[in-house]
Length: 381
Image 1 (tube, rainbow, N blue to C red):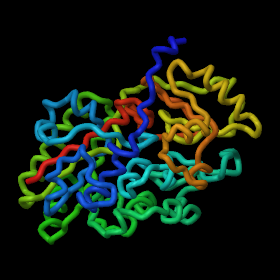
Image 2: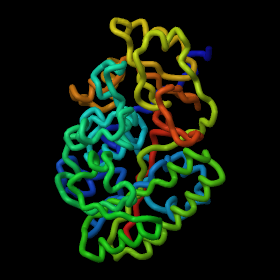
Image 3: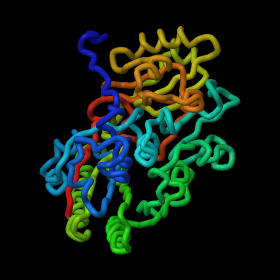
């Protein structure tokens, strides 16, 4: 077992300041907003006539800095790193961006969420938040997305949201982008044109989302194809800067970073699996749901099994340490497990009930700097 003194500290999101949760409130309210203007956003952004918030899914700060030569337009923007939310996964983070609140408040607490109370055994379900499905299929009627995530979006404004056409009717879109004006695109050129058209039509704020950096990292890891996709995204940002009207602030951020895991998959040992009724979360932020009365024993067994590669915390510790934000609602708490196993090494925790269409090489979810730090980079045309 590794020396405990060498175990890194988790990078807990800075919900009170430099966090993606503050982006939309700041950009919509401006310098006169109730929370003031963040000192990590250039002042001229708040003074611009128009704002584009572009989210590049999966572009971590550290991955960007290691490939600055691949992204000269993006790295030339002003700004620096901020934190995303915990867990560092798309469903939680995108909902935090659109609502401006941490996962403990909006309740989209991960990728696979327990929706049957504390027990995820035979009589409960685990919701895949991105697909909005359970083992029984489409879950939109059983778990209404708008009721599941009750927080207001974009400060109760109604902005245009430019996203992939395939996502327009999804349950997750209903949960984190309802009551917006959705504009669908099919390719990179379509995203750019949709943004240009929105501002030409007089819009003051546009939100745009591109997911291929994340998709590429999952399938191919953090080299080769990943570098090519980053270069293509850099060209997209350059085109936007060139084509958008003057006095438009372009703000580039992300929902999480990535780590290269590949085949470093760890199964639960019998001493742990014998104490659980099921799992939720994701492979790098795994929730274990204990059998009745076994939570303390489960925490000890999981710590014994994984403390050399992961932070192991009880649900009470996760909540008390503010990983999910300063507020965790009752409904959000009921969606959590009893013990969290959150790797700080490049490994993934296997759940036999979790199925993916491809082998995931790049992954995210944990609280390492590679996964938590994301860019907040800006320019005014």
